[in-house]
Length: 190
Image (cartoon, rainbow, N blue to C red; front, side):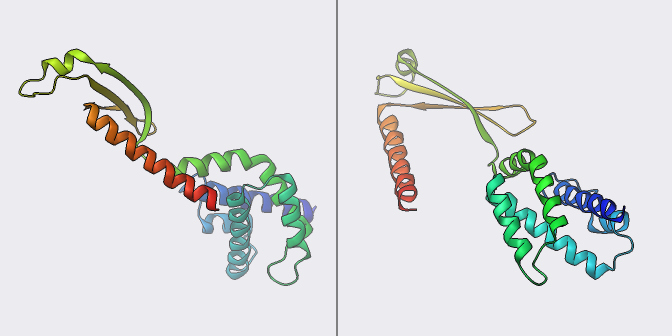
């Protein structure tokens, strides 16, 4: 019975750490987890357990481990001697937790790594009349009109309208080619 309670407490600790670290639940604190799950444990012992589980979760999440990688990682940790090692029960709890929460943790990590605002849409057209109707310009060639839809999660979109003549379009295309070339250099060297 004590072993079942220990597994439940450890599973709850892992869920609490995930709530705090990955799901931004500010109501979950280290003190709350200690008082609810491990009231008999000394503060130093709990801090060591909490930090160990948090570190292991971060390692697993950062690597986005699949089942085989997770099993190899946990096996290595259970064989490790000293304070950095895991018990078989801890490894089992981590494995169960990761199997049930992997997708949600990954979605959280992706959401936190997005730049805001993000591009939601892009539309463009070439307009001959806009070019002819511009006052004070000697240029009468076609104009590219670009509309960008930008937005933050949970908010309405903002629209940015840009107007380019042929020279500006060519400059933008050149810059985009330079960026692609830089990305390709980095990707192909690693």
